[in-house]
Image (tube, rainbow, N blue to C red; front, side):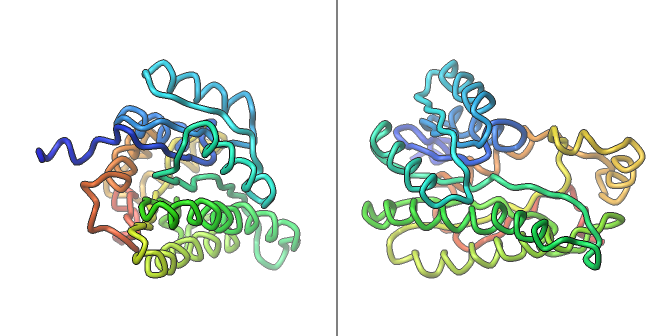
Length: 255
């Protein structure tokens, strides 16, 4: 088998949550470019369908499913819809997440809880219900989107809830990798740094320049620069990768 063929995903089916825009959209497009059919999951139905349309233009099958990752009934319904319409689930990317800032001493508990529900509980629910299907078929690759914030404390903003949620996602990833290795299911995480997503573009230029200055590369990347990592981890090229947390932060956390 040639080296390039190891990266092909022909005949595979993937679920990507939070795929309506930003990094999730690029992940979905990258997996489709590698040959996979895609179930685009997002709470925003228009953006969800827009991404699915782009994937169909690449010649791959795509379905758009509106789903709230924090509602278990929604997760169960969406997983069943993927099975019914696309036949199987080989790849899961848990990308849906939010970030906001608040000093710990002033943070309302509902702010903490909402972020944890989306960033951590939503990842667990999709891993659980897709994992059940992958266990049956004795095959699968799960990739959870964590963050460099799982390992560092970001400055100058205060976001202890976000940092904590991503640290938990990384450790959930490692735990599931051990539990599901006997079923030939690989579970890995990607830990991005700052990425120029629509959300990040809302920050003022002074803040963006400050964040960029902390990284050796002195820049904030486009989301498309990370999609190759997800193709790699989803593919047979990463057959001996499980429980890994791949940091993609332009060297930000090196110092």
